[in-house]
Amino acid sequence: MDSFDKIGLADQLNQALTACRFQKPTPVQRDSIPVILQGRDVLASAKTGTGKTASFVLPAMQQLLTGSRRGGKGPRVLILTPTRELASQVNAHIRDLGKYCRFTCGSVIGGMPYPPQIRLLQKKLDILVATPGRLMDHMENRRLDYSSLEIFVLDEADRMLDLGFINAITTIASSLPKKRQTLLFSATLEGKITVIADDLLRDPVRIQLTSNQNKHELIRQRVHHADDFLHKHRLLNSYLNESEVTQALIFTATKRGADRLSSLLMAQGHDTAPMHGDLPQNKRKKTMDRMKKGNLRILVATDVAARGLDIKGISHVINFDLPSVAEDYIHRIGRTGRAGENGIAVSLVTPDDWGKLRDIERLTGRTVERSVIPGLEPVKAVPNLKQAGRGAPPPNRRRRRSGSRMRF
Ligand code: ADP
Ligand code: MG
Image (cartoon, rainbow, N blue to C red; front, side, top):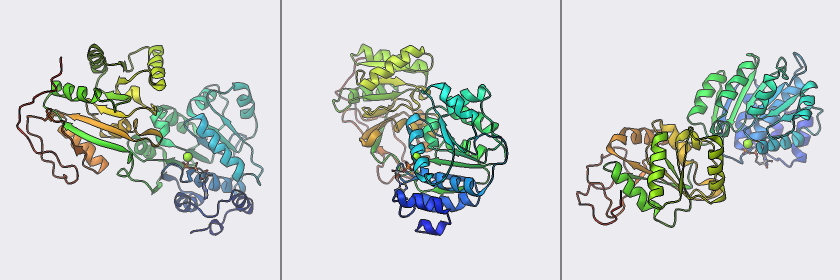
């Protein structure tokens, strides 16, 4: 199917496509629109900018035009998006593609005044675009009637999970009618996405136009084998003393570990702060602001605290401890290489971590390049990984460490 005509959309939608100068469907539109029109649940991943929005907006509109309202005045289509900005992009698509239809649409998004949203929810609605937090707010005040809901869309689902909306999403989904169509769109289908997909979608058609392998292509990944904790410190210091590290995000396994490492680095004269769930909110916010403005060079964080962090200046993500769940590795390294910049992800791996490293390489389907810093080679034997090829482990050099001694 390489033209919109063949999909069998209503005339009003075809006219709008012409007006938008959408001449032919993008791959994700080509694969998903026909199955959505058949009423199937869909789990789709395709890179950013490949036209995912119209992939659900067009068939949802077709459904609005051809079906009829079954319950009360609440929305027939609910679209969840992670942020206000993404909600307004979806709204722009709805406006453009629905310009020859008479749909009533609206949005309830965070950071905007309540009264217009409350008024909107009292009216009869066809399409509602919402961010999860604000929608939950309205739901708690019993302002939502889901009795007419037919289609539930999770847009940019990976970002929503990154921003910590998993509980909100499951609560919202559990308030919706069981008999509905659920569509999940995401740039990636990794980790927790598969968990919520299993939970929320019924026998979905899976459309995958990305793979774990080609994600993070702007991020150069390296592993340094280390003998022990002190050796990791020396390796870390050797990185932090380099000027190419503009901003670094260092991950530790525990909150105490983050505090400890941050204090140690501070004592060595590095500009650093810890970030974890036990710190008061105002302190976390201050630290984040400093990081965003580029006034802080090194952040030592736990996984939870770093979720959804989007800071352009992070040149290096350093796994001082490897994550115990392999998927978290992908989330962590995604904190660098933002906005088209190149990034470097470094993992410091002691013999205790070899199992975790193997899980990560299995998940991402690639062997991470092994690196050594002259003078800081590991003394202990390193494993000869079977899947080695590109980026094979370095030969085990039983040499005495020399030079670059750090004070601890
Ligand atoms: P995604 O959600 O995958 O990141 P969007 O849905 O926001 O991508 O679409 C990205 C851009 O591509 C938008 O500007 C949109 O108007 C445009 N676009 C979408 N579908 C088509 C198409 N079939 N032909 C031409 N442009 C399209
Ligand atoms: Mg999108």
